[in-house]
Image (cartoon, rainbow over all chains, first blue to last red; front, side):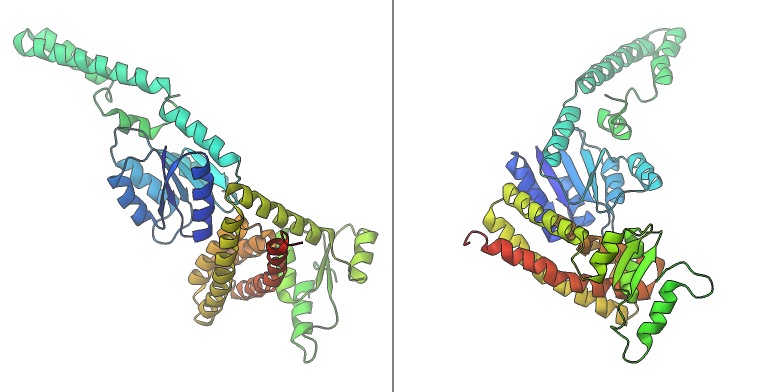
Length: 185
Length: 192
């Protein structure tokens, strides 16, 4: 997988980079949230591992910004901190779209295992069934809409119904999944 | 000296003793407290206490402190540091660890100096950021005590406690030679 590392500390960057490369991942190093966003837009990145406290833009803000960018594939976001997060901060981070947490010093055995989880979630079957569901409702909506234009008024109402019962049905998958990686599992 | 006393507590008493002429180092002061958190230990040390004992007092620990024996925690810290170096070597190789040690040496000295400069300018936010970076690198390099001191230093900077920030800077500086000794020993271990 292609992994984006965001950390303003050189040692943390190097240790994490080596650990990931050892388990066969491709790594991009960045030192700040701004640098990370630039790299994120230019490249097909599957996982972001970001430090929490950084000057200018912190890890949670970065995650929030990344979540607002529409991408075809889900980006798994791991937040790294040097101290344990308080329950409030933890809840806030999850609310902003963080998927997983790591604590420094990063453990050589733990990091690759967490990435296996990331890989599983990114390629998880619910995603393809969500895709099928989405395609199906899009097709139904399209069919009904075509009928509605040529058909009667009552048919036109039924054409709007799927959109009412499922307001997000026509939204891109990435946008919907980005809100709740857990519910998709 | 007990920490929690009415009117004049142990910390304040120590601060006053240490500010007396000729008493910067003597007498040795041993803190005794029921609150044996890491934070309290660092605060005591930052203010000028030499040793730290938790309540209830374990006679053996007290004897150890009085005889100037190295505490078991200090030994455990060194073991953890050595284990971390081995782990880093597994991640990379010997050269990789050498590179990390050399970066850590330069950066730590530099950052602690910058903390001093920030303190002079009364810029606690900058001091806090530096402590945060040190916190990350020291954790990765297995310098657990430095990591703890920097964590408390960062917190103190956030809370606006300049005195404790200064104390943490001093403690982190004192920690450098201890960590350095293990790094040097590790560097020479192949030759032994």
